[in-house]
Length: 251
Image (cartoon, rainbow, N blue to C red; front, side, top):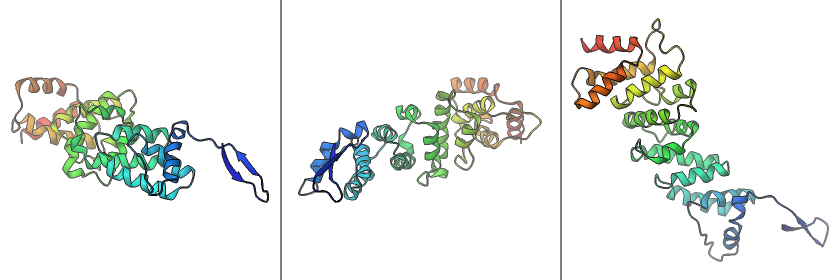
C-alpha cells in the first residue's frame, strides 16, 4: 500500500497500487535511491530492467535517466541474454531494441554455436539485421551463417514469410558458402514456389549461386569431407539452381 493525501481532506488515504511482481522485489533498492543523499543506486544487469520499469511506473525521471545510462554502458554480448529475458518480462521494447542494436554492433562476437541464438525469437533476429548498427556489407557473410543455424534450430517456429524477411537481400547482400546450401534447402522447404522450375531464380538462390561458385569451380579450398557433404547437399536443392551453378562454372 502507498499513501497519499486526499484532496480537500486532512486525513491520509491509502490506495492499493499493483506493481509487477518482479519489480516489486526492487522497491527497497528504489527507496534507498530516493532517500540517498548522493543519488547512490545499486544496479546490475539483473535489476536494470526492473528498476527502469519502476521509474516509469512512478514517473521518476532521474532514476530512469540513471538506469538507462547504466544500461548503455553495461549491455554486451556476455550479458545480453539477461537483459533480453528481463526486458521481455516487463515488455520493455526500448531495452530489447538496445539489446538488438548491441548484438548488431558486436555481431562477429556471436558464433553459430553461441547459446544466445536459441534465446532469440524471429522478431528479435529481424531487429538485429534491420538495425542501423548492423554493417551489412562487412558482416553479411557472418550473419548468413548465424541465420542458417538459427533457422535450422527454429524451423518448426518459422514460416516462409519470416524466412524471406530474415534472408532478404536488403539485409544479407552476400552469403557465406558454408551457409548458402543450408539456406537454399530451407527455402525449398519453407517458401512456396521456390522450387518451381518454370520461374526464374529467387533472390536468395542468385546469392547462393554466387557464394557457391568458388567452391564448385575449385578456386576455394575445401577438404574432402566438406566436399562430399556439399555434393550430397547439392542434390537437395532445386534443379534450376544446379543448372545455373553448372552453366556459370563452365563459363
